[in-house]
Image (cartoon, rainbow, N blue to C red; front, side, top):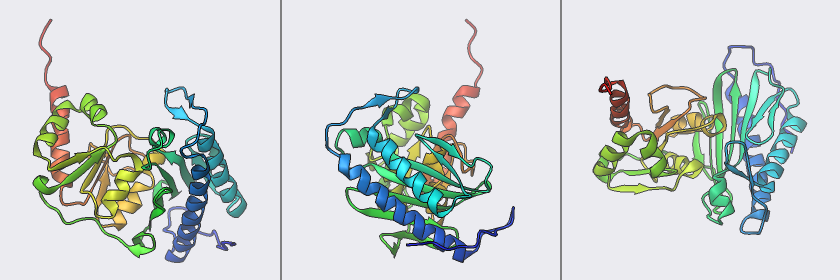
Length: 282
């Protein structure tokens, strides 16, 4: 279906609710289309390549991202695009789509149904909408500034759990978190009722829909972060870096129900203090 919109949002102004609703409907539609492409390759034998950072990539990643790019260029030719696999289009545009065609490629290539498609839209430096779609379960979380957050079209909200003894906390890999923030990880695991590695975008979906209290990532890229800011905000939670920065392009991520956020940030600072302590002389 065509998405007709007057792209007249002046620089530094806020987009209207009508504009954002149009963009959000489109983002949700193309995320589902992208998901159907991934399912054609899911649990099949495909070649796995290695990128320069040694992370895996497949034909499914590239074909899915190409579809997303083409749909956006057909509908909004003046918009910019930043994708994980295929780079930038219209880099100077005030509107910029941020894409991760398969977030959780390790899960995808091993047949684990926890990977997601991520779509976000930024105006200038602010992310105004985000979509997380899990193709195997057909679950889609979507949010835009001022429009709330939904799970499969119905309003969804973060949980109200307020103590670690009942909290469900996720990360993509606890060993990676421990390697970067050892004291934080040790202290946190000693307090938690429930710690799992249902991570990547799936973990953020769990927090936004009230099925987990926190999701932690010690290292992120733009396409990992941009959708989470509007999604967690509109779901009633919080998203910052592990340093507490509210940054759409942060290099780490802490998503919570809001109630536990400051306590987790305080624990995260344990490793900062450890780094700042004077080192003994050799």
